[in-house]
Each structure stands twice: as C-alpha cells, then as structure tokens.
Image: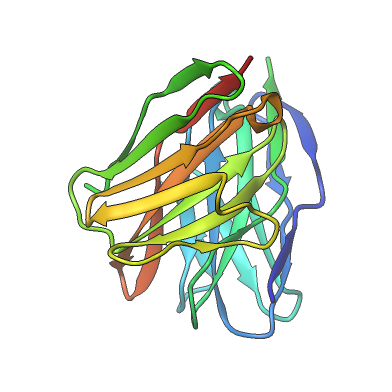
Length: 114
Length: 117
C-alpha cells in the first residue's frame, strides 16, 4: 500500500519570497510522483511529475520538485512566489504496477500575501 | 489536448431524489476513469474506478448501491447519487486515465458541487 504525507496544511508566505511545500511518501513498490494544483471550486491541474531519469523536474511556471529516493520525499519549491500562486497543492503517488491508482496527500494551502 | 469535462458544475437537489453527474473525455478515449469525493479543505477520496464495458470497482466503505457508476463508452462515465441525503453534499471530481510518456497520467474534470437540501 502507498501513503502520502504533506507535512504542512497551510503555508503563508509573502510575495516574491521563496517557498517549499513538503511531501513524503511510503510505498513497497516503485511509484510515479506528481504535484497537482487546485484553484477554488475547480478540478486539479497537473503541475509537474517525476517518472524516471533526472530527479529534478520543473514546471512551466517556475515550480520545481526533487525526487529523493533515500528520504522518500518529493518537495515542491519555487524561488519567488506570486499572488496568483495562492491555491491548494496536492502531492500524489501512483504505483507503476497493478491498478495504477493514485493516492493523494491531504494538501497544502499556499497563501501568498502582498 | 487531454481535456475532461463534467456536467453539471453545480446541482442542488432535494433529499430523497437522485442526481446524475457526467464525466467526459473530450479529445481522447479513456478505458478507465476515476471518481473522487472531496470534503471542504480535505484531500480527494477515491470512491471508485470506472472501467469501460465492465462493472466499477468501489473502494472500501463506498456504497455501490448508492453511488451508481456507468461507463458505457470510451468517453463517458456517469455517477448517479441515488436517494441523496444532506451528508452526500460534497464536491465530486472525476478523472480520466491516459497513457502518455511511458506512464499513466490522470486528467481531472472541473468538479461538480452537489448540495442536497
């Protein structure tokens, strides 16, 4: 079985400051890792993913995440946030065997203040 | 590409009635779709896996007779909440699975806000 832990339920940060949203997972099999973003009353949008290869993955809007196998972590970072980054962020894992069901973390609310 | 739609986006119904929510993959075929339920300020809870042409697989604790799922075509899955009660009020999100970049990816619909009065 897999589980995902997002250590912070809320992260307030000032505009243009750096931010890190933490994610740890546990799994007995290899997994694919994802970060999704959800704006109010909307569905989820894929932000970035790790499948294999380079452990550092980037999104088009400045976010990046690094897969750390030894620490079973996939933390999301951005060096300078904008007001528009205010949203709920979900870390998720999908085992690369069997039914490929995705398990989500509890989410982290990023609140960017002016 | 890879767009998933849901209809309706919002629905209000009276207790005891049934409500149908549609999930469509607009530009790809999806043999597998998923239905999630999201409570306020909570994560997504997987309710069931919908497979085209076969019965849905429900997660533990989800009543299959209450949440009827039909995946009649490669682009459409429906969730029917039968005999709805106020505690069924929630945000329901579907997703469709697509094999891309050597892995499966999920594309999510915009969600349906169900309010049962």
